[in-house]
Amino acid sequence: MMTLTRSRLIFKHMVELPHCECVFCSTQEELTGRTRIYLVFKDHRKVYQRNGIKGNWEEVVNAEDRQNIWDGFEQAVIERKIPSFVAASSEISMI
Image 1 (cartoon, rainbow, N blue to C red):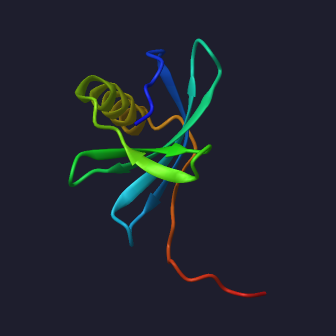
Image 2: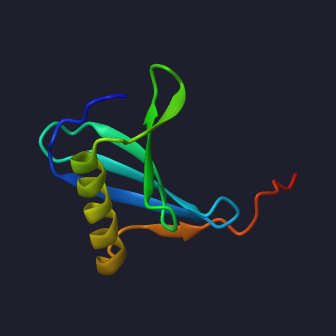
């Protein structure tokens, strides 16, 4: 599991994926400017972070890290100031 730099996360975009019951979130660390990508499963209160080096998703198991991400996510949802989308279907149409 990757350790997170405890810098305030600024949520930049959110895409709700109803067919997966999760929300894809892109964030930026305020201090470092580093981009982080998360999958937030609202019903299960689980958070996964993308590990670009390994090419996989890893569950954020550290309770403090998970809570900080969750708090930022909830605040972004309440404020509704960032681009947020809902994926209507898992099907891709060809043009």
